[in-house]
Length: 527
Ligand SMILES: O=P(O)(O)OC[C@H]1O[C@H](O)[C@H](O)[C@@H](O)[C@@H]1O
Image (tube, rainbow, N blue to C red):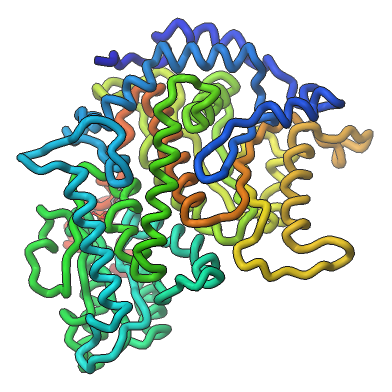
């Protein structure tokens, strides 16, 4: 059994702290040695991706200190315990089994006589069969016509991951003739969200997936009622247009009002649930079950790499530990995720929830305060768009923000033109290469307004193309990175008590049970 200790009690952390400002990346990347470093400081990921950390503030000394920290913090032992079914989510007294939805990494996990791997596979099959029947016209609307559009109603983990993945694969599916149905998403309780989506779809040919693990989320239940109202007013029977994805114990699971229900359980956290029916139903309907299966395979292959004790061969743990060095030794407050891929436009938003809801905590897994900083602020936008927006601060602002670039050699659609001796894809890739060096090396200028100090660290994940498999690997990489960082910080990364207070107060406002500041704010907003 691994022992769970606070980071500041580990000897290896004391040693690591002595290495503050140890590497000057501008110097490390200069000349021929710099070129060699770029070629060497790279480790393979799954599905043809690679993680390059040449522009990070590490060298052999820092990396060896990080490897010692990984050993002393027993990161691989903790991961093994997690996938073998230990109660890692101490706050909610639950196991953490999202890896099992993609592959059996360890021992069978059996709960009340049910093998959990079999349960997840059975639910995947149920979603796949449903999708195949919809595509084949065996499940139709009441007039016997095929459904053409699918709309997901959900929020948080029941929206962000699936939405990011759908957007990521939409063009790939079109280019590879696997595009089956257009997907849309309703998440916000702002009535303009549901209203706008509903006016953009052909209701009679639309399927709606109500996705809520708990089955109690105010926004989702409100939007479900909103959609039912629209269907009824259009003379359609809501129960012939809706399915549910929920846990077996939720109130939604008991309803007869759905074409089918696909189940998950309490052991897959909302922000880790894209690989369950939460993402599986919509992605199977939109692109076919085979595409979703490829995504799971990519994630499974990355998970396998994350089991490696050798830090230099474990890109997820390596990324996590470099992040620890940046946060707890260098003192950087945030991290930007910058995909040079328009298809990944919502991926940073998904990672925001994944990372900040997991590790945005100041008490350890035993409920005691910790004396060190934990999860960074995560934000991001696709490049090159971000370059014309917030990169000014990243290059010359007062905070150093570590950067995580993502780039692909090939586009998804393959439609491109040569303008002034380069294609658009080449221009995209040229920009990411240029940014890495500009951030790291800077440029001296007598005019301080034009001076770039450099020394701004970044990493880049490079792939051939964004495909279902490489997307799955990318997703698993970041999930595993967040998990390893939570282990190092001795946090429970799998609950989210911090979102409760606002929900409770909003209920009080709606029940007009307020006083003081809450009452005055409620009055100001006309509630
Ligand atoms: O899927 P649901 O139970 O509706 O939950 C949706 C979301 O709401 C909660 O407030 C949590 O903060 C999220 O972690 C969760 O993903």
